[in-house]
Length: 428
Image (tube, rainbow, N blue to C red; front, side, top):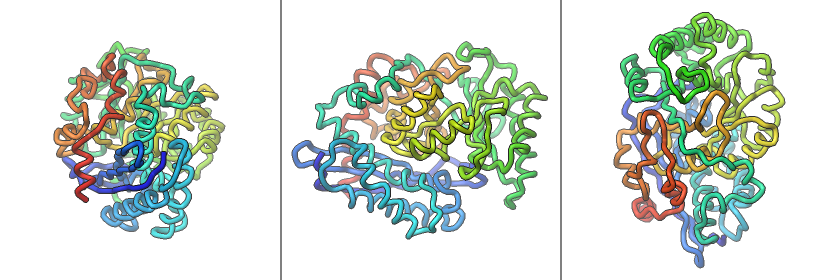
C-alpha cells in the first residue's frame, strides 16, 4: 500500500435515550469516516465510533463530551498525517502511527491518558488500511486476507452467533422483558453505577445487587437451547469500577444466594487496569477488556487468572485484536467480540472475527455483542450506508445472527464499496 492522500469526516449521531455506563451518561456518539488513497490500487474506507466515556472516562469527566470528541477527532487526523507512505500490511501502518498519535493525545489532555483512547481514534484508519489491503490483494476472502500466522486462531466457521444486547443503567423491566420475549439468551448487564454521583462504592454495590436481582427475577425461569445449562446467560460488565476483590465477592455471594451465580457466563473488567489483583480464585470466568491494549497486556491478564478476553476490532483496531487473539489462543483462553455501539457496517467487521472464534465455554454458539440497534435514533438510515445493510445476516432472529453461505462469500460486505460513506467523506 502506498498511501498518497487521505480524507476525514465526522458525523454526530444522536442516541434514542441517555446511555449509562462507567458511572456516567452519553446522549450522542460521533462517527468517524476515513478514506485512504493509493494512486495505483484505489481507495479504502474505514469507520470508527468515538466512545470517549468508554475509552477514557477521565477525559469525559475533565473535558466533557464535545471537547473529548473533538480531541479524539484531532488524533485521528494526526494519525492520517503520519500514515502517508509505503506499507507492506496494515499491522505495519498501525505500528508506525500509534505512538505519535498517543503522544499527541497526551499533549492535548494529560500525561496519564489511556492508550485505549489513542486506539479508539485509529480504528477508522486501521479499517481503511485493511480494506485497501484487500483491494491490493484482489479482494480475497477474509480467511485468505488474514496472515497465515493468525489463521489457526480464526479456524471456526459458526453458523450462528448469539446476538448480545445491552442492559444499560436506565433500561426498564418492560424493555428487558421485551428482549427476552424476542429470544435473546445472553444479556450484557452494565454494573458500576454511581447512583449518588459521589463516587461512593458502597452505594454502587447496593445498586448493582438490586440491578442483578431485577434482571434475574425477569430471566430466571426462561430456558434456551443455546446454552449448556439451558438457562439465560448473564454477561456482567463492571467497566473497572470495583476497588477490591472483597467488594466484588459481596456481589458474587449475593448472586449465589439468589440462584444467579451459575447463569453468569462472564464478568468483564471488574477492576481498574492498574489493578493487578489475581482473579483465578473467583467463582466465575473473569474477562479482560479495557486493560488489554496489546500482546503484553494480554499475557499479563492471563497470568492474573483472567479466563477470557473481549476483542474489540471496532474499538481497539482489527490489527490489535488479531494479535491479542493469537496470544489468547496459544494459552487456550477463549475470546469473543464486544461492541462499542457500532454502526451497522462496523458490526460486520466485528462479526467476521466473532464468526471464526471458538465458543465461550457455556455457550453452544459463538458470541457477538451488538447494541447499536437499541441506541441510535437513525439506525435504519445508517443501514442504508452498509453495502449489504438489509442482508438477512445483518439482523438477529430470536437472539441469533444466522451466518449463511452469503455472509461468508461476501465477507459480510466489509470489502465492498459504500457510495454513501464515500459521498459523506468527499463532502467534508
